Length: 268
Image 1 (cartoon, rainbow, N blue to C red):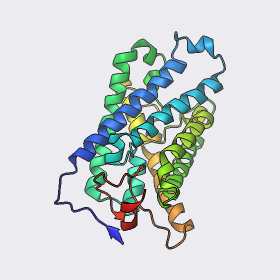
Image 2 (cartoon, helix red, strand yellow; image 1 turned 180 degrees about the horizontal axis):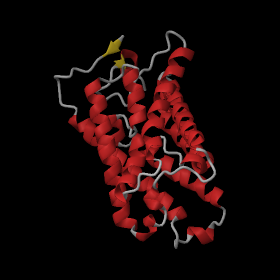
Image 3 (cartoon, rainbow, N blue to C red; image 1 turned 135 degrees about the vertical axis):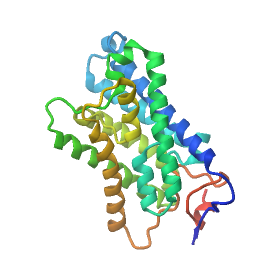
Image 4 (cartoon, rainbow, N blue to C red; image 1 turned 180 degrees about the vertical axis):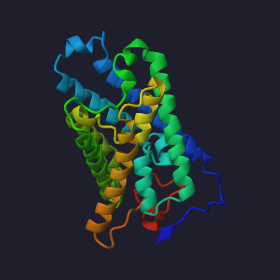
């Protein structure tokens, strides 16, 4: 049995605002880790000359920011998608309506811009030294390789999210899984495409920088990966395997705009 929220019961504006703030926090604090670890003139260049080790630390900090948003009051309210690709996949799964999908994507995009603007204002020349945290195709990689890489890592992330939120014993661990998986992706895949996974994360730095080199990749490939991840889950999962919630961290007493399975509402 699926419990659907009553669209006339209350406005969903609080969820949209929470998604905006969550995305802004993720972009600002996540990219602050990038600036601190790779910004020219900052001490990490001297402390840790190995770029691979610095990239691992950056991945842990960046992904950790997103996971902390998920378990925060903001994430408990909105579900902490903080990524249009994730929201698109949940809409395809029937967990949210089209109006809410649009509201979430607009909030996420604006949040990405706000977070990037704050980054530039705080870190100034240090942010500029790394192109304000822009995601750019890696040197030596063909465009098709960069594109497919973004599709693959986003599809894998969405697939894993769906596996976790369709299992009552795993769903509470979704933020931890995302932390480990995204950190690993940043560590291993960032030299190829920058490991965007997220159009909102890429739009903000590109807009404040006024540079659009290769940005079409990050507008198209991650959402395509989100669709692919949903399709793989749908065709590979058991017929009775149902996505229980649209939230990355479900808390029963928080209101929800998602279509939730009734058993989820009493899960602990």
